[in-house]
Image (cartoon, rainbow, N blue to C red; front, side, top):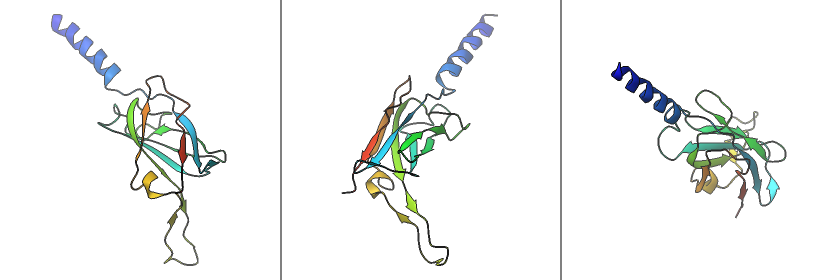
Length: 135
C-alpha cells in the first residue's frame, strides 16, 4: 500500500511539472515603430520540449497584435520559461512567374539569424512586445 501512495505522489508531481501548462502570451510587433500585419511569430523553448507543449506560434493583425498557440495540442499560450523568438513576414511569389522566390520583409536578425529571446513568466503576459528595426 505504501508503494501505491508513492506512485500517486509521483504521478501528481509529473502532472504538475511535466505535462506543460500553457500560459497566455500576447503582445505587439512593430518595425521602425509601425505595426506589422501578417507576420509569423514563433516561440521555441530554449531547452527541452516546453513541458510537452513544444513551441508556440501566432500571427499579427493589422495593429501588430498577436496571441500565441502551442504547436502540440493547439492550446492558447506558451510554456513558461525562456524562448528563442523568430518573426518573419514573406512577400508571396508572383503566380505568373514561378521562378520568383518569396522575399523576406523583416531583417534576418529577427528570423533566420534570430537574436531575439523572451522569458515567459509562469503567470503569462500580454507584454511580449517586439520593436524591430530595419537597420
